Each structure stands twice: as C-alpha cells, then as structure tokens.
Length: 295
Image 1: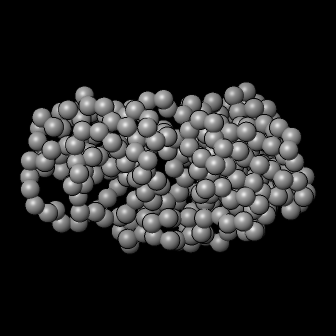
Image 2: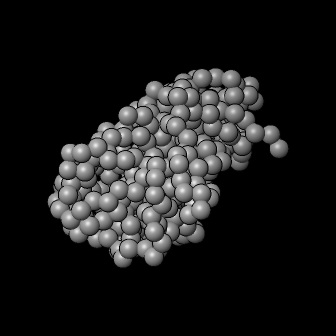
Image 3: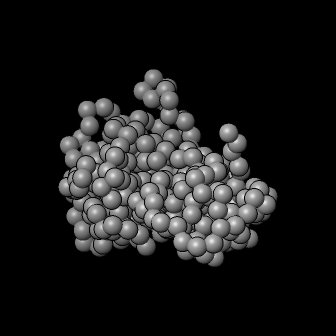
C-alpha cells in the first residue's frame, strides 16, 4: 500500500515487544488492544498482526493490488475513491483505489488492519513503532510503501462489527464507545507511602482531566496535586504498563505502551491493563476519576 496522506501521527503497531524490559527495551504496541484484535479478526488475521494506528486525523492509502481492510477503534468516516465505505467491517479495496480514513468523530485512535498484516521487518520480535526508543518503523510519511503479507487462510468476517457472523466469530462483541468520562482503577503501591495519606485518599474523590500533553508514552492529567509526605530523591526503579507516577508538580501521569522501562519519580499505584484501552481513546479535556482498589 502507498501512503498518500499520513495524518498527524500514524504508526505501525502490533502487540509490542514482550519480555524484554529487563534489557531496557520498552514494550510499545497498540494502545487500544481490543480495537487492534477486532480489526485483525475482521480481515482474518491473527490477533497480533501489525496494523496502522492513527491519531485523531486519520490516514489515506492507495492499494497496490486488491486488498481487504477493516477500520475499528475511534469512529471515523471511511471512503474508497470518495465513496462511503463501512467502518467496523471488512472492505475490499481494488488495485489502485484510494482508501481514506477521516478524522475521528469521537475518541483518538483508529486501527486499520489489512488481510495479511503490515509486513515491515520485525525488530526484537515486533513490528511496532516505539516513539520513545526509536525502535521499529518510523511514523508514516507521504510516499511510504507498506508491504503486505500473504492473505490469511481464514475468510474475513462479513457484516458490520456490531453484527458479527455468530458461526464464524462467536466471541467478537461490539467495542465500547470512547469515554465521555474516564474511570481508571488504581491499585496502590509500591510508593504510596511517599505521599500524605489524606492526599492519597483524595485521589478517589478529586476530579481530573486528560491533559493535551498526553501521548503514546503517557496520559497526563490536569487537576489537584498529590502532596508528598517524603522529600528527597528516589533511585530509578523499574516501570510497568499502567504505573501512575507523581512528578514534582504533583499531577498523576499514567504510563502507556511507549513508557520508559525505568523512572525516578515515585509510583503511587498501577492502573490495570484492562482499563488502558479507554485511556487510549480519551481526548484532552475528558473528565477523569481514579477508583482505588483495596486488597
């Protein structure tokens, strides 16, 4: 496929580089994994096949040979040579035709899967672009040619995503809408004792917003600062997906797929991975609440 319009930020993503954090290699991968899985299943790929992840502004690609594509994630208009095509369903794009994914109408990130997957060379077992480390392919630019793998043996699932073929795909369910309010569960630790107990308790009561500075590395927040009880510096320690760091300004930072493997600011708690797909689709200004998990 030939990239005609790359959009503000479009990257190749799969399920990321698992099991290499001890080497200092970040995970990367799709921020909204359920949307990636759904797009791949609609075109008959394995769940972790590489696809395109767009950011707000969509993408346009021209087919070189007939391809089958599907778009999921944030709702957005889809067109083939200017004609409206389905979102959340397999779409056949003839040789030479232009497929356009427009700006997201809700949410942030769309996922465009092609039957056969995006076949860029893997790096350390993944085709994902990592914006922090620079591993993997660079963000898309106009004129890039994306290789596509051999078509999968399974047939794509017909019909819209909300009405799957129950015989072909019994476990595919409609994806949740992008959040109008983001609720993130938070399991306290390992450095919750570095913060005033009253301030930690208020995390579940105070209101925050998603900050415009959010990106693939972290979701940043605007709202009341979390007051520290311990002054001084913390030696760098390992960071995990969903870790909630409290930097010097006191505003929580939720680490996403491109997060660093180590960090020196204390981590008040960790958001379960299941909650992070919604975080990937929360636009700047979205209200945000933390819900403390006990035990």
